[in-house]
Image (cartoon, rainbow, N blue to C red; front, top):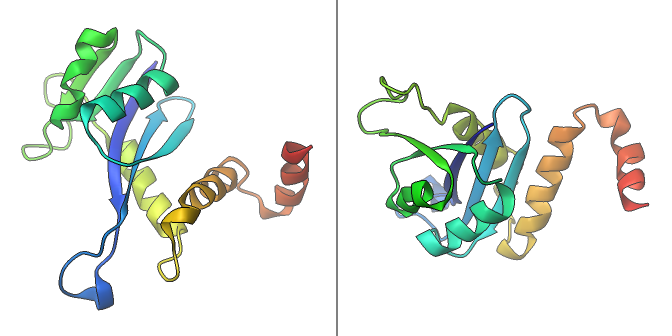
Length: 152
């Protein structure tokens, strides 16, 4: 099993210029082959925080592909097979063929699915849940059925 992991900050420029407005960090993973994903809001992207989320969502022995963010350096010693790609040099590692293209595409879809205006950090979990629900059930005609089935 191969899981791509990455973290992203959802923020925007105010009035499309100047400095970035404060946003929120989201950590996620994408399982190759099945397309299963997880998205978890995190307060910081330090090693301790990300490792606890990884241990909660990814089974030991899994191959994890990530960028070269130093918070991921501990993964090899934590019973994971860790492969990295250095994005400042290339998008696909030439020796191991490791890449994070699927999770990067997921971030594009997530950011496109969250409203740009009137978004609030307190509703972040709801935004992510809505995105994951719509991704799992792409046909809008089935949404109400699956929603009530999940609630029941």
